[in-house]
Image (cartoon, rainbow, N blue to C red; front, top):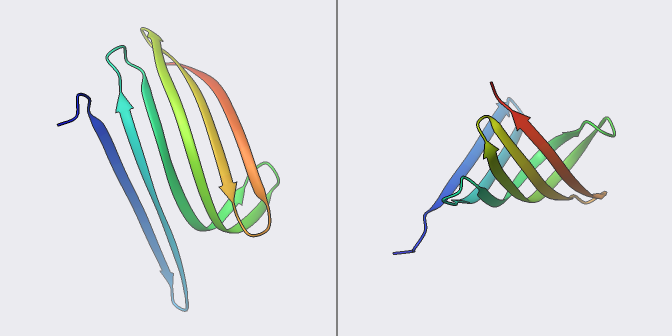
Length: 103
């Protein structure tokens, strides 16, 4: 038994449009800490993915990601995330920093 708990999430999607089929799947491994923080790492695969920054469709995309979320009080949390997208045409790296306030 591990001295801490891990969560594993698996996702999958299958679209079948007659002659065309699209498969998407992913895996996410997360650990929650006693102070409310959470660390997640994972991967996802998409046959098609829309890049909203460059307004183009990308094919055969593998994404690797890591995210740190920390609760900082009632209704406040901070996020730090990194994504690496690997596809045959172009690699893309994204660093995200954000805050969330819920009320």
